[in-house]
Image (tube, rainbow, N blue to C red; front, side):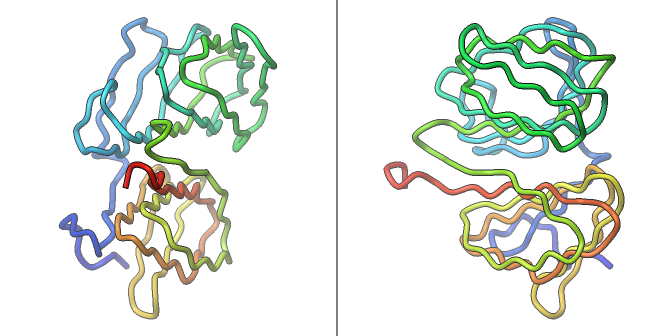
Length: 206
């Protein structure tokens, strides 16, 4: 079953298949990133309002600095990492779906616990957008109002139903992007799990 229409219209969710995501190596050689979506579309690393991506971290090292950006990171695969800030409290991600929050301008060193990891990343330009990441398992029924909703599939295939007639099957690392002001999800089914990224513009930037 597939969602009718993927033309990017604001009232039709966009299906983003994992196989279409381009991998870009980091300048320091420490890993690579696959961008899922960003706003504005095609914006560079200095000009996005929000950015969602998946990263593969090959070795321990410092994160790039992003002034004025709030970051959220979810461990997808691997033995995890310790996030060691220049000052403040460290954070440990030791099991899949563990999550960390930190300011992008804070110097942060990622110390891998045992080998490479895969991570889901959300970056939000402070003062323009705010948001959160939720975990949705099979059986979730959600009705919400948001400026943007992105559903990212992990583990195994999931089916997302919207309303009474429309449905879409997501395979691991596929995403479904809603950019209409209101996104209604009637039901989620399957053996995997979804990361639901729920985003809203800050009032001052509307």
